[in-house]
Image 1 (cartoon, helix red, strand yellow):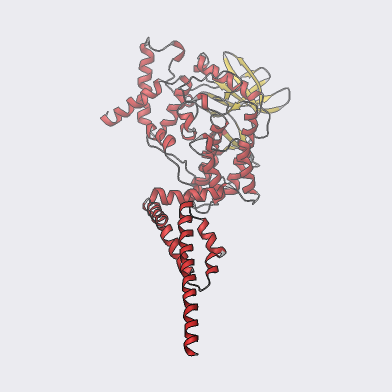
Image 2: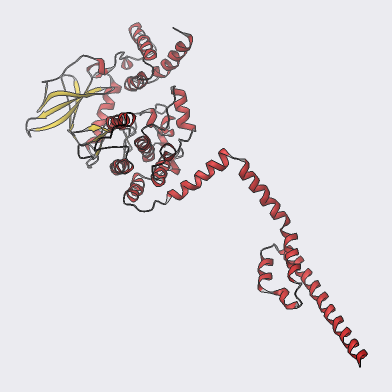
Length: 470
């Protein structure tokens, strides 16, 4: 193994070893697509550590060394109460989803089963039960409804309404492939600005409802958004949701969620600061990906990606695609602010701006975005420009008293002393401070007196000339 690869294995192994079983598998699955050989080495090391029975690791953190999607178990035909498992329709990091049939009502349902290898793991069971509790009380058109929760044959299961269609992630892959090949996208194209805004609006409305019920999703991403054949969006998977009405089972220092879509405060695992605005950030990232077909941050290593999320600002959407309206780009930028206080205060406010854009109304934050573009252009890219402006301004203020006096003296060239106290002179003088005004007033009185003396002298001279002529 080359030294560079070995250093990378050690780095990721250290990160994976700090996570609980479910989060560890999610972390490894996420990295596996980018670094398959490195992840394979980590799995072998974890397998070895598990067999060695290290006294440093408690029994409930036993290691699952094979991804769930590679495990060979088949529950088709299994009867769970009144529900029958028909066929597998998907696998995630911790379980399998089956198409089911509810015999009593003769309707299709989706049944999520915790993988057998995790059924006896307290962490995994706790997350699964939390998902059931959190989602069971939610009833909204943009949220998939949980119908039942139970356990049979030692396997916990969750019954949900069955939603036909694909995930938003699958639609984005299709749109990206169509763009690269030059083909036309399907009738549903998430890359279209109006379509993207509509999907984001529906998710924002669903999140606003969830937040009103005390639920923070914490894992909003394209894989957790279903799109029906009619083009409607539905939120799924509340496995890492935070119920603000209960004690959080996620310990301080553990980052729950998917790194590319996590808010900065979520990455730093500041559970006390996580609220609805964290979901707003994640939805902003999803909107960004729909509009650009890329995620805002794509660090080639986990530490780099973390630093990007925490420290760097994503390029505005319209910089990737000038066809995206500035108003929509501004909405996305505000949702993705690093500071939660600078984001939308709630998902309802985000939805209101999205609706205004869709209906062709003005979006107030677009003007603010233009100001920020100027700031980025002048202060960041060309810092010498504002410095020059400040220098000129300071020089101008320094010469105001002199220039003001000169202008006032120019105005007294009129032969009438009364014109010196015209309205414009008083207006100019009032803009200066008291001492400057006093100096100018004294100067004006002096000029006035001088002009009177000149006129008096001219009068005497005219009288003398008249007498001489006589």
